[in-house]
Image: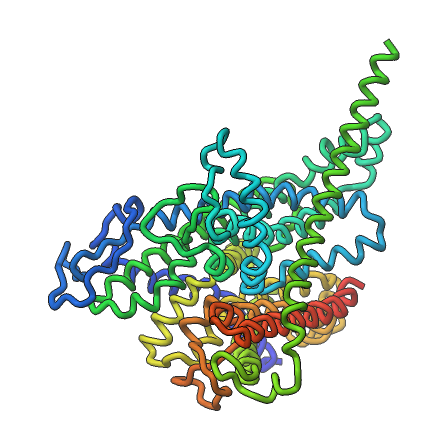
Length: 329
Length: 283
């Protein structure tokens, strides 16, 4: 009996340590990123966020320059404003397009589609969430970017007189719009699946009551079901945003890789913070002062902080709502 | 008077119907996109499926995918080996032992970890494991990076499956004189197992499709995986999709599409398996 009690204590402690491992890992990652980013913070300061030029400096120089006690190659400058704009711009497009589509898809799926069809389409939404991001990138390259270059882009440029940002040139089909649309397709399943699960929880009685009061079927969704699940949906949208902000591979494949200039129109090539880390780490390793890698660590740290904040907001939104609302990620 | 209310009712009806038409249109477009993705990959990738795909290694622009397939399996095996036990035990603690506040905090931390962009984990893996620990591009660095990514999912699904088991089972077992440990092992873990396995399968399907955390930790190799855990770079399927598409050779393109097709097939199989297991948890 004593032995059993001892064993169960051991078990409890072991599982406790395992349960805290995500915390320890997160802390470890944070410490490593801060440590790696400090030289870049000292070298570049706040112009890191406002500068437009990303230049590793003269790699063939004999002597590094020293600034604020840290070394960098002569001429090195690390400004990430273009990457910030690329990240925010593509994520904004993803939300603007993805959210209405995701919500309407969920409404149609729950309330309008016959049960047998629902049973086929519902898993399809989940499959969409499970498709690897490189496959989305492949689809973006093969199918979406020609569509934008030859069909959607030329069509949108006709609105260029009214909205200058929509004016051409459309370019190669690799850029802001394509990245945003690929991201939209990637976040739709996250938001749709959560909204669908939430709508299923809305009591039938309330909907029937709305119907009895003379509301049309869409009004009862809009004024009865939607308020019921609103906070959960907001939480899911913020999680989708988190996914869009941090997506690397799909964006890397369709963004057209821009550096040193800000997006000039809807079709302009861009880079995002996440895709930049993947694209530039290789060449940054050739920087003999190591400063380029530190600058990439600074980007990674910025991304990490943004992620934590997004998650906090999502959690806050969900917990402010109903207790039984469960958000799927 | 009556006329105006019916007119209003009429226009409300039209508005309602139009919104539903829009919603069905949105659903249709989403379905079209899914089909377009599948058709694009199948049309270009199906031709590449043959026996030699599985028996020959890639030459960089042509050949088969044996090294990438084996490499992916190798990375998945080790990452599940690391993240599986840790995640399941962590989930048990959160569901059974943890005081409410601690559970809530740890759950949030796991959510944050799940939300970290995978390239950030890739950077971390590179700077710590590849460089500081001196493992080089390797199975170990790659699979640990993957396991950091999948760990939060395993913790969460394990906790959720255990919480679905009614508390009365556990209390009943205690009343019958079982110790807490054996009560947990017999009456709680057994019904929770299918749910936990489902979580593992979904975690595997996440790991399968990742690229960003592997580029700078696993590296890439044109040869089959070796038995060495460190200092030996290893190939994987998602790398083929990403890089071979940029090669100017049609043979390389076909390999990229075939690798994408293999990935989708594997993901579908894992999702079907997970679906097959799921109802038993709820029943």
